[in-house]
Image (cartoon, rainbow, N blue to C red):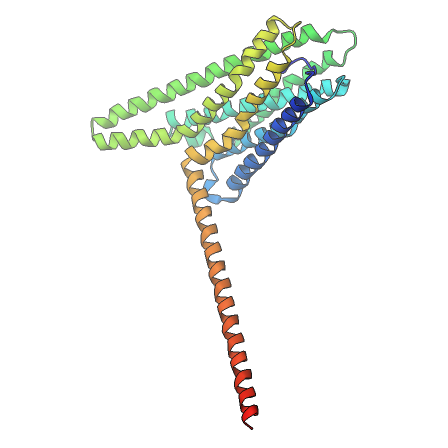
Length: 327
């Protein structure tokens, strides 16, 4: 899923631009996704199975910001690339695969919730959720098999790297097909429910449709965002697999930067499209404004009280001095 390591010989301003771009992206990923994790963890009204998958995705995105992006910055800035940094590509592939599989798990949860609402609590009970998350974290471990030929001096890394990337990209395409199939099924289920309720009450049908739309739009937004950000990267990988002897350094950096936008946009999508998270953020913002207003009022009252006290003291002193003068 990642590229053959190699530096891009650029001017100093290009180097500064790349480091500022990737560095700021990594920082924003950490701040936004940590905020989402903290919000979902501390607010009891957000404690549910679906949000647990959102937390898992946010944590995977944090790893992308702390592992994948710094690795790319080091590969760009260090020449020649040391052997240990080459081996770190397996950890980078792991966190990128983890982010993708977390989106697949989130889609699976929405699939069960929309198509099988009556048995959702049974199918997605605690132990089964743990199994799904366990698979999400274990399956990307296949990337570490690349270490077998990266660290072996008798095996040429280049051709095996292209083959391994082709395998991973094929797996990504199949998993993406599964996600698309799930959303097609969800859309059909929503349409069927709409037709059923329409026979009873047109207004109820509209409300049912809006309810289903709100239930899937945050997950659908994350998936669409992921596809748009990763599509250029996939095109680059296909081109590099076909012509792995050529250098595509500039395209490598650009497509990697676009791919890194997905972890930045995910928490923004939660805040906009997830109704529960949006309401919680609005409630917290209202509380903060109210608290700030009360503090300002208290501070203003304290200042007014202090002013009145000072004025009273000054008046008393003035009266006393006047009395002494008259005496």
